[in-house]
Length: 167
Image 1 (cartoon, rainbow, N blue to C red):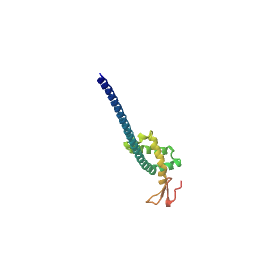
Image 2 (cartoon, rainbow, N blue to C red):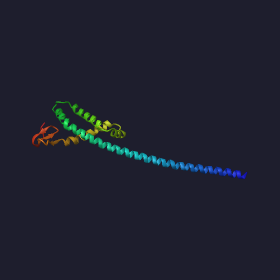
Image 3 (cartoon, rainbow, N blue to C red):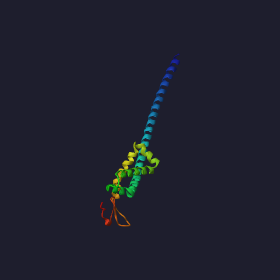
């Protein structure tokens, strides 16, 4: 009888110790898994941040080339016509809309996804980028000399002998 009681006590103690060990091992594993999950999330955030930075670089490049093209082919003439009262100011805003559509068409789906994952309003981002690069582009094309004629081309028009055009 004493032997049976002793065996019952030892069995109960053994089961209790085994449960304590299992619980501790489970806690250690959960801590390890949480740490790995946090590291994975951090790596994902770094990847997302890198993808976003690359997408902004691509957006800036596309925006600069698009705005530059529109500035050299259309905007200066429209700006002059608006200044002379020949066209409405809305013609300039239409050029901005054209630039926006051109930029969106040139952006790859991967770049757009990277932007959309970090920004709620990509349209506003792109339109702000257009407004950001426009002064730089306008200043770059503010006074260019045509290589074949030697005329200075400004945002207002042409002038001979390197002088600014009079409007």
